[in-house]
Length: 306
Image (tube, rainbow, N blue to C red; front, side, top):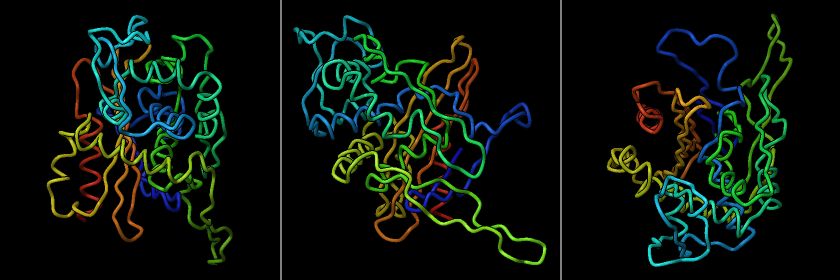
């Protein structure tokens, strides 16, 4: 779990927990060996908006189920059995075949690679601790592009910290600040040896694109995959002036033994500097435990209520 201030890059909390006791080895928040799953739809959507002039209301359609991705779902032939939707609904509902077709017909290898790079995949992200590098390799075949754009693959890898920066870029109007956790170091006499200062790390998208992305992420909370989890927050008077946006993602591990469960979100008050981006990564065994989006809801509620 990561909680970060988008405006400054300051990490307020970074923690891990296992029901079997202490997590051994490196802090999982620093590891970049976790499949990004549908979180990558943030990158694909931003690329479609900025490079291909997509708008939240753009009309789209898909064949078959929302969460599957078969080659026969990726045809441009609309046919009588197609389901109509909008770009916003496809994002908020995490509809894989829609994003698969966007990857093939609208973005392609060059644009997907470009925007993955802009969002800091395959880059060392400077941090106070050693942080793994999130990795992606965009193929040139049609089905490979569909898998990458929709996040329906186990090869696009990311760290929880980097996942939080994806959301922070949207919340902070297109700017990613360098993440940091150490504010200052002093020696035994009190002499200051080091102080941090907020600094810009990247500008993956422009402000207009960020506004459109906020619409997509708000819809995820209001009517999409996070509707039921975030409804108790939206019903509280405290959150009437706090904008909430999110993206969820689920995928099995390589051996189909565990279910990986992501939620990355932002909560931004209309005034003040109390805005946060948060990412929760949960791993489930045979039985589903508490979902990542529910944990995120409790943390957001605690942060603003305390």
